[in-house]
Image 1 (tube, helix red, strand yellow):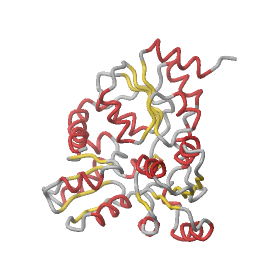
Image 2 (image 1 turned 45 degrees about the vertical axis):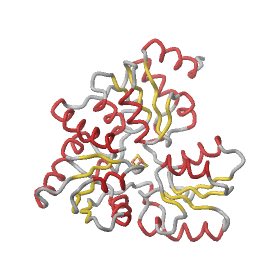
Image 3 (image 1 turned 180 degrees about the vertical axis):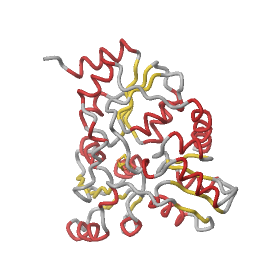
Image 4 (image 1 turned 90 degrees about the vertical axis):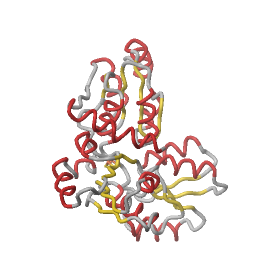
Length: 301
Ligand code: SF4
């Protein structure tokens, strides 16, 4: 039987490839990755990568983002059906209709969106920089798509702005209810509750800290507290348990497992490198506009 980790390392050298993995990926995948992080970090790595091939262990919009930022590179998504239901809740056509109702209003799109939607938008954002991106615009009114919960969180941080929100949401984070937070508060009264802004507003309101995956990880690293309840995908809990063994981490809700992120296994990474699959292509007509949308974000943060 072949040792997948050794083979992946060998193929990576042969193909001149770099492996990127999102924080929500399985441990076995994160361990073979060259870079692990959230969407913002990984998009910066993709933009600056020197290798010919980028193996993106995540979901489709992430691999598409890497392709938009590095169009001359080969970008591989190890599991071709790994999509993001949130990104699929908006189409370019739907966005064009919304824009036609608000002429001249700039569009901020969350990175969890297709290349076509990015191409229709003015500037992109991630959960780590959404507040900063919206605040950087001079317009008072802003269209924010497709995550209604993140948009609501941003609107509360910048009350002087008026956000027009699209009604999309992450099906995984939406499983958490305010009642769940109240229950864990009783169960672990000394714990800090750290929550992702993709959760619904009633949940976010009860958090001790709200942040993106990397911000949650940083908070736990820097905090003097020792017990934390994590309100985002369980991959973050796995990472924290491994990197901070002297602290305790609990998952806020057992449903915080993204089935799409968990499709990629070590075997998928091996097959991706071995069979050169599944290559991501973004239509030429969308690349330049989507690139501008992403680059504007990278200029702000
Ligand atoms: Fe999409 Fe939610 Fe899964 Fe992230 S956790 S990839 S937003 S479905």
